[in-house]
Amino acid sequence: MRLIDRRGRPAWHDRPVATIALLHGPNLNLLGQREPHIYGSATLADYEALVAAVAERHGHTVSAFQTNHEGQLVDAIHAARGAADAIIINPGAFTHYAWSIHDALAAFSGPIIEVHISNPNAREPWRHTSVVAPVATGSIMGLGMHGYELAVEAIARKLAS
Ligand code: CA2
Image (cartoon, rainbow, N blue to C red; front, top):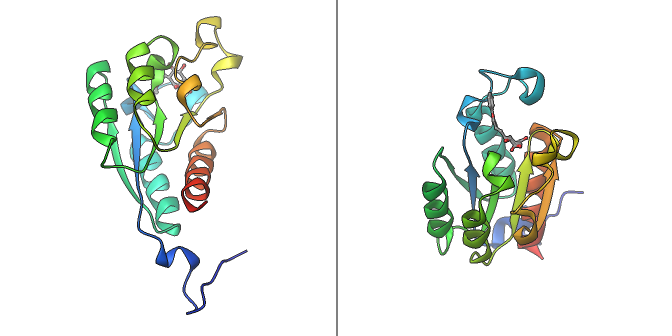
C-alpha cells in the first residue's frame, strides 16, 4: 500500500528526513573478493548502494562507514549519537566477543538493527554468541542482501511510529 497525504504526496513527505548510520566491521571490505560461497559476489559498495536506495524510498539518508579496527567502530557508534537516528550494523567477527561494541551501542538511543549476511548460528560454535544482540532492537541473519533491505524497512517503520 502506498500512503499518500492529503496533498497527494507520499506520507513521509511531512516527516523530517532521518539519517541511518550503516556500520560494517572487520574484513567486510573484502566482500565480493573472497569466499563467495559464504558471502556471495556483491561488494561492500553494492550493499551500501542498496541500503541508500531503500532508505531514499522512505525519504531517509544513509551515512556508511567500514573499519577493521574495534576502537574506530566504537568511535563511529559514538559519532552516531546526535548525528544519526538509527543504526544498521554488521560488526563482523566483533559480534562474537567485542563488549566495547556492546557498550557503545547501549549508549545509542535510537533503533539498532544487527545484520549478518550469513547465518552465524548455522556455522562454527564460536559464531553462535552475539554480544551485540542484547542491545539491538532486532537481529537479521542469513538472508544476504535481502537482510539489509529488511533492516531499512524495519527502521523506517520504527521511525514512523
Ligand atoms: O555473516 C556475516 O555477516 C558475518 O558478520 C561476517 C563476519 C563473520 O565473522 C561473522 O561471524 C558473520 C566475517 C566477515 C568476513 O567477510 C569476508 C568477506 C569476504 C571475504 C573474506 C571475509
